[in-house]
Image 1 (cartoon, rainbow, N blue to C red):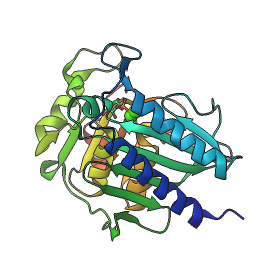
Image 2: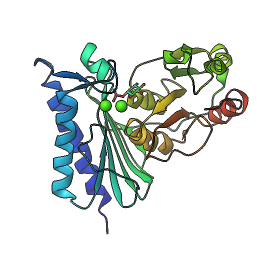
Image 3: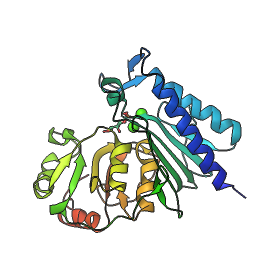
Image 4: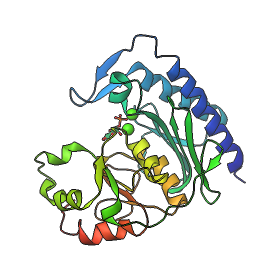
Length: 266
Ligand code: IPD
Ligand code: CA
Ligand code: CA
């Protein structure tokens, strides 16, 4: 029998310890490198934190699999068994430029089903965590369930890259939604934007393209509160490939899909 309570407790403890390590890196010089393009950044801390998690997980749960953004985990082609999905620092550009607006994101899945979601806003010392079926919390406080709202009363988090021409996606299709909403916001960290949906600070979050480690933890937290997360076509995410992402309060998700996103080739 899997002891999920102790997996949850260990995961939270490791995330908090990783947060301490990141905090104590603030007065040290970062080693910054680029990945796929000059704006795709990675630091020594992204790598160190991922390796820290992998060492902890492998020590206590050697059978489990790990998917991590920086590639120190396993190469996965299926979500069979227990899979830890880790983004050691989500919002690396913010981490480098601002030393805020970034988070650690850790999800634990069993045969593709989300069990644990933990997102740690290190600078604010805010730990968002959910254990499927047992509620979602911000530090020790339960987060209330999400209520329905209208497009006209909603704030939508989305990225300004929508205004750029994009070969795959017709960016003009987003204009009516932006016009109808009360406002838009952009924070540059998918993990925090997802917990902002979970806590009602924004009502929806839309992204053109994310990877499983960007959203694995956020999905568990949002779904635990009655929110809905799919891709922009309204389909379930597969947690193995890159996809668009659309998270929203219940009701709002259906309305936006039906009235604003239906013609998109997302
Ligand atoms: C990025 C952030 C950003 C999102 C990018 C992600 P990273 O993650 O979540 O908000 O727009 O698509 O790649 O690279 O900082 O972990
Ligand atoms: Ca990320
Ligand atoms: Ca990252």
